[in-house]
Image 1 (cartoon, rainbow, N blue to C red):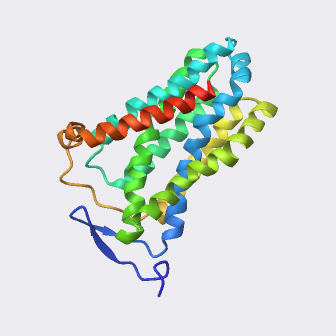
Image 2: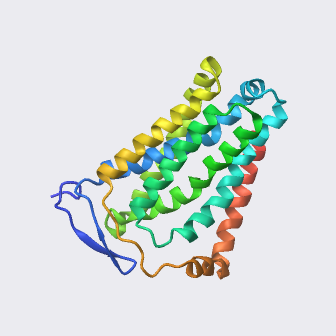
Length: 243
């Protein structure tokens, strides 16, 4: 009997009992949908700067600040949400994050001024890091320990597909119909992700031992700062190339 067709089992993960779904594939697909939506909205703005500049009557360099606003939301939202929502059930966190993400992207599409658009893009970035962090933990909990890296990679595959398919198609959509349409598209994909998570990702209990102090304590570890440094240099170089 394969893992996908086996009856639902339970395993111990971080000293807690976690339910495993009968069908791992759909659950990972649900998580990957969120990654696809996030990856699409993160990069599509770069290809639509001339259209956005014309739409809200600003210069193209000023329109670039819209990208910075999203990035600022990512930086602030990831640690803030991880700390404040540490004890919330993981599936509930994922649903809440994607609902907020959908609302912020639709607000971006409805923005009629530069200031409103910058605020909407900042709000869109807030769920970004927290979703990937929580989603990775959930993905790992769905499979046996020796398959956890595979499960996380499948969840993150949504981001890869977004760069290959989602961003180019959304850019064409925005150039042909208007810069607002890609944000509407991302909002709809986010709501589809919400439905898929509710349908396929099992409920997971909250971490009763989690606390804000425990989350912040991780910053005392050298390994954490080294990992952050690698990410900073890597993504800094990538976005410098885009710029």
